[in-house]
Every structure is written in C-alpha cells, then in structure tokens.
Amino acid sequence: MNWAHVVLAGYIGAVIAIVVGVFRKKGWIGKISGAAIFVLAIVGWNLFDVHYLIPRESPDYGLTETQKFEKAMLSVPVYQVIKEHDPALWQNILTQSAQMKEAGKSEQQIIDTIQPQILQFQMARLQQAPDANVIAYMKINLEQMNAVAKVGGDECFRFLFPAVKGGINPVKLIPREIMSRRMENDMSMMHAAYGPDKHTVTAQEKQLALQDLQAISPKLVQQYGPDIEIMADPNKAIGKEKVACEMVQDLWTQVLKLPTARAAGVIRLMLSAEMQ
Picture 1 (tube, rainbow, N blue to C red):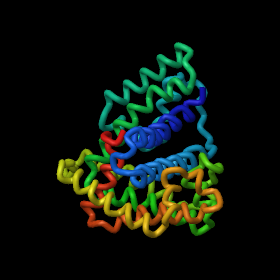
Picture 2: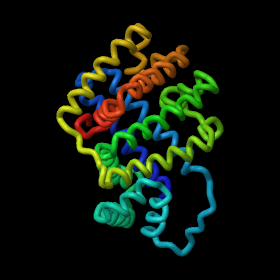
Picture 3: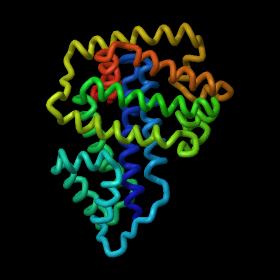
C-alpha cells in the first residue's frame, strides 16, 4: 500500500470536506461565500499535490507498515503539528490505520477514516490562530492564485477548479519561493494557535463576519452580473475561464481589504465547523 498516497489523500480530502459541509448548509450565508471556501480547498489541493507528490528517493526497506505510514505522515507539516501538540490523536490515527491495513481494508477506507480527524484538528487550529497568522495564511493563497493568473486565464481556472477541465502542474507555474513561504506560513499559523496569543472567537466576531460577507456579495454581483453564477457552478465558466479567475481573485481581495481583525473573522467563519 502506498502510504504517502493515503496520507496526502486523507489530508486533501479533509480540506475538500469543507466544501461539502458548506453546500449542505447553502443559503446560510449565500453562494459566494460557499464558493470562496471551495476555492480555498482547491488551492490547498494543488499545493500539497505539487509539494509532496514530487518523486523523491526514500528507502523504506525493512520498515513495518506502521513505520512507513508514520514516515509518510511526518513529511506533511500538519502531521508534525499533530504529533507535537496532540499525541493522543496522532497515536489514534497510526493505530487505526495499521489495524485497518492488517484487516485488509482498502486505501480509500483508511482515507475515509482519517479525514474527519484531520479536518477537525485543522479547523480548530485556524479558529485559535491570531489575526496576523490567519491573514498571512490567506494572503499566500492569493499570491499563488495571482501567479498562475499571470500565465493565462485558462491555467488559472484549471488551477482553481481542476474537477471541471483538469488541473495543471503548479510547480511549473508558481515560483518556488511562494510555495516555500506557503509551507512556512501554514506551520506558523498552526503553532501560533497553541501559543500565548491564541485567539478566541466570540459571538460578536461571527456576527460581524456574516455582515461583512453580505456586504461583499452585492459588489461582486454588480461587477459581474449573471456571470456571478459561475461562483456556485464552475461548469458554467466554459468559455469564460478568465472571468471566473478574476471573480475569485476579487472575492479574496475584497475580504483582505477589511481591517485585519474583521478579515480574519471572515476567514475563520468560512472555515469554521459551523459551516459543515
């Protein structure tokens, strides 16, 4: 069994699960905010697909299945944080995966088991990360998006919505420097969530974030008219790939124009457990 594949698919699937949760509650904050979360999940997909699926030499001869799995996990930053800060969860994932492998379960079954645990951990960390870390987390996502957009509208669309027309190889289009900073920011954000300055989300913050989202939506509708439907259904972007890319960029740009605390509140709201 390819444990690296299981680990990465589990992580990526956990991020994409955000989208499923949001669309189950569609109508709570509108289609645009739901689409925003979808975009973020896709950006995460592409980043980890590129950064960790690049072929590398890693002799695993003589290692047990559990050791191979642990080694694969520790190549992904989020698992390093889990092992350091939540050893009980770390051990549970290792034990469950090894037992399922011995029982003859498929890779997909193992992935389906670890996904919810990873998702819960990640979203909890983002909720407690300080405002500056949350903003940095989103800014680097937008940088990646902008880098691909400079290559072309079609490439940008494929980067954001690979399920529609197929994806791209971001390693050829995104500067390595941006990708390196993304990984550093992810680690900083998660570690900061455990630090002395960790954040506590309040009811007031949630209400203000919802109001900000509702204020941003009409601006995009006015600017893009009927094309705004692409945000909810990317399949409608065929022939309008550049427009779709620009809408997504504008959405995140508008969120990041908000004062730091309010922008961070919107990001936390869109990725909160309540949105599942």
